[in-house]
Length: 338
Image (cartoon, rainbow, N blue to C red; front, top):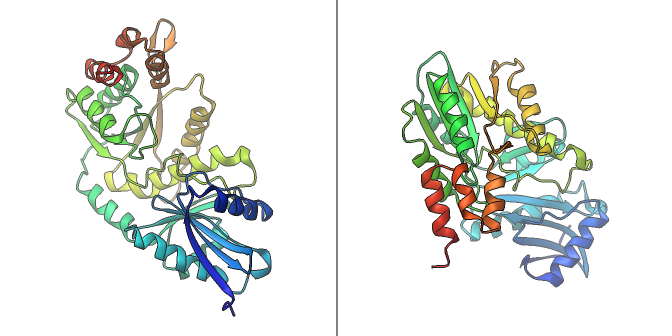
């Protein structure tokens, strides 16, 4: 049936071919995801009739022209896209899609992880989630109050330190998850190092290297979500459901701590969803959300964005009151031309 279809594989840096894919996606009402590095396209004559993209370990922008839907053609797209990923050593893959496509992608070997409303779901083609849960169980600590914090720390400030100290003070044990995705100014390894250095005086804490199941906003899809106003809400819901249903139960987490957010709309939305998703009782129970007031310096909240702004302006000395000594020494080194 599809003998006349030919497939093409190209890097997203090929601007000429990328422009054609953008036009194809636009015509069927899908926006291109900017983090895609590789595309597979299907052509009928000179016309693109389907495509799929690879962004790191995530498949995105899988789409076919309306006239060829319902014929099983998308399976051909998936076959070529998976081959392209495997060829690059990316065997453990994720994909985001609308939940209505769940049955089809299960037929392609993907397993459902979680969904947010009826708008977006996350799937994987491996047993990574099961293995991740087993590893987490090894870090289980007993206690009546087991706390948790998820942190990017870009970079680690006295504000972060205060939040962790206050949480640890009120818990039998505290689990701190460091967002792993290298989508920040500072690398994951540098952020992790500064966090460990800034918290080495605390004895009732486990610092976890974040996994693919602590979802980064950078990898969350927006290309098939029609209402842009819903993106932040859907991202928050999906990330928090995975935390509540798959991560927290392995560690017996009862509380999640977060700093209050007086200014950032996106973080405010996340905090609001946190109280809604985590604190509402379901078959997994509930997790109490504790909001801790941020500390100030010169009548302004200490934040990583404030530190980054000062660093950008080369006002290094003004950073010193905002960060622990290890962070300040690190920032001095990276800002020096020598």
